[in-house]
Length: 323
Image (cartoon, rainbow, N blue to C red):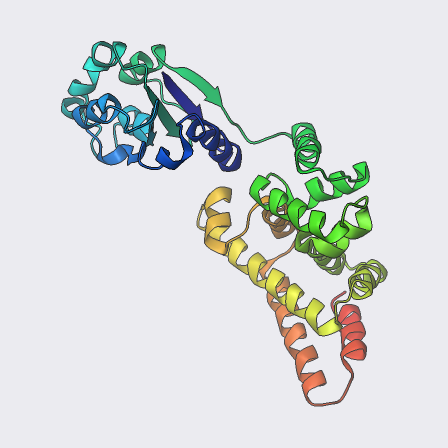
C-alpha cells in the first residue's frame, strides 16, 4: 500500500503517522520495522530495497519518506534534474508488485507538484490531504479533541481558545491537557481559559497596544486592568508591551525588505493569532511612532527605578503620554 499525506497541518499529519505505526505489530517489534527516510537523499533503488525488506518478527513493515515528491517535482532542487529523474520513471513497474507486508508513506508538507513523474507515482497512491483548518473546522476539531480527552468545556471557552491560539493544534492540545488536569473533571469555563492559557493573556496585551496606538486611553487602561486582575503586575504588562513594540519594529523592517508573512513569523518566532495581530498592527503605526513609544517606555522604567513614581503611577502616566 502506498499513501501520500499532504498538507501544512503538521499536528494532524503526525497523528496520522502514529496511526500507521500502530499497524506494525507486535508493539515490541514496531521500532525495528519502521524506517524514516529523508526523500532528498534517496535513490529509487534504496527505496525499493527498503519496502522489499521482509518484516522482522512482525506482520507489517512501515517505510516513511519525507519530501521526496516535492523534490522530484521541483526542477530547482538538488537531485531533481532531468537526468536524475530518469530512474524514477520506473516507479510504476517496480512498485506495482510491492509486498503486501509493506506500507509506503510519503509525507509532503507543501502542495504536491504536477510534474509527470509525480503524477505517475500518485496514480498508485492514496492521497490524504491535511490543509490548515478554517475557523469553523477548528471549532469542530477542538470539540472533538475535548471529547477524546474526556474534557467538559463551555462553547464560549472553545471559541476563546480558537480566537487566541489559532491553528496551532499542537499548542491547543497541550493547553487542553493542562486544563484537564487543572479542572479535575469540572466544567472548563472562559475564566479558566483566561487564567491558564498564556496566549489569551497576550490577547489582552494586544488590546492594550491597539488602544494605545489608536489613542484610546480609557480602553487601554481597562484592558490593562483586566490583565492585572489575572495577577499581572504593571511592570510585567510593560515588559509584554515592550516585547510587542520590538516585534512591530522588526516586522516593519522585514516588510520593507519584501519578506513574506510566513518568513516574518519564522524570523521573529511568532505564529497563529499573535503573528496575525502583529501584521495587522504594523499597518496602523509608523516607524517614527514605534520609536517614540519605545522612548516613552524607557522613560517610564527610569521613573520607577529612580523612585519618583510607583509602578502603577508610572504605568497610568505612560498610557496617557502615549496618546
